[in-house]
Amino acid sequence: MRRAGAQGLNRHKFEDRLRRTLYWRLKKLGEFRIHGCQSTIYVEPLDPAISMDETVEVCRRVFGIVAISRAAVCEKDIDDICKKAGEYLAPLLNETRTFKVETRRSDKQFPMTSPQISGEVGGYLSDLFPHLKPQMDAPQVTVKVEVREEYAFVSGGVIPGAGGLPPGTSGRGMLLLSGGIDSPAAGWMMAKRGLDLGAVHFFSYPYTSMEAKQKVLDLAAVLAQWSGKLTVSVVPFTHIQNEIRSHCREDYFTLVMRRFMMRLAQEVALRQGCQCLITGESLAQVASQTVQAIHTTNAVCELPVLRPVIGMDKEEIVTIARKIGTMDISILPYEDCCTVFTPKHPQTKPTLERVMEEESKLDVEALVAEALEGVERITLG
Ligand code: ATP
Ligand code: MG
Image 1 (tube, rainbow, N blue to C red):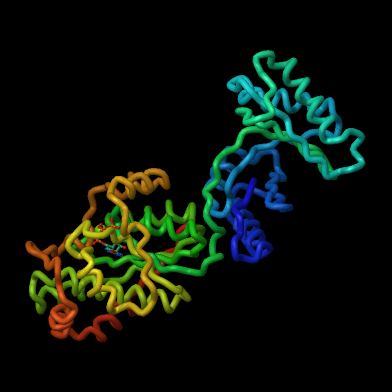
Image 2: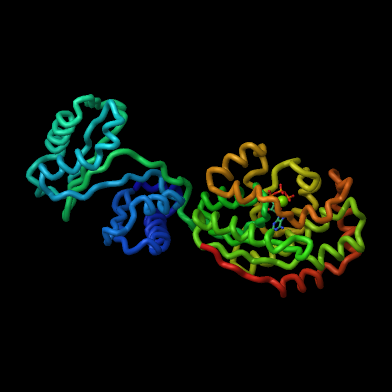
């Protein structure tokens, strides 16, 4: 499979990270030999019982991989190469009109040159599939033959990889993960750019149910298929919400609550070595996501807050959620703590001063410390 370009990053570190990621992710399927050379990583199952469909499904979710090809191993013998190409690629070539053959030969002892091998395999395939037309320029399928030291292999057809940068090559971010559509998509987008993820979820039992918590863990499990192991820190949020409701003006409930979320997320992030926070905020989607509202919640953060879906419409976010497999879980009907005490007329143009005035009615430090004491950590993936 082809890895992404490593602009500005150390290429060896980049490839090493990809190989290690593949090793850990594929471990559950069995033993593989994973090695790389010149922008290509080879993943070979060491046990014939390993399902290659499942292997591709895992590889398809590893960021940093641009394209994936499945290949059949052949004897280092031109007759076997031709025969395997015909058998292995038959389903693909039956659906194809134009093709060409490309050969790479790293074993220079092999008695034929690369153009000779390509010519031989191309001729064999043309005879076997008379509907196929050789075409050097932009053919539908490029059949690839590689002759290596130990064996040869043939491949054809390319499966798109996840793109982006390998996990962890950009640092580590703490995702504020709710049960909604937006935050899983936001986490996926930043994981794609090479961030390792941690997640924090604010849980308001019994205002929100155990099913609502399970839904968040189910979302985290899907996200973990892309990001790798994901630890969710579940922060008890009920006492804070009750205090806000008892002491603050109703139209400021959500903003004061969101400032608590950002503070707590930042504390959890710092404890877990994260360099940034990630939210699923989208400009003006709800009252707490106007620029003025974001100003008041951003003011409690020292770490940078990444908001990758800030400029996206809901449909665009939904497209991502469907593609990554979180959508069906996100639309399950369990409530989120944000919806528990939603004010009838929330402030959409708050000033920082007024929000801080409301907040000053609470013992912020003690409430934050108490919530942090009760954090429960659950690891998925
Ligand atoms: P989402 O679809 O991600 O729930 P939303 O449109 O419902 O987003 P809000 O509820 O205002 O928007 O939340 C904005 C962001 O705050 C979310 O994207 C998420 O990052 C964070 N957030 C909201 N509720 C929680 C929660 N209970 N736990 C952790 N983070 C939360
Ligand atoms: Mg929400």
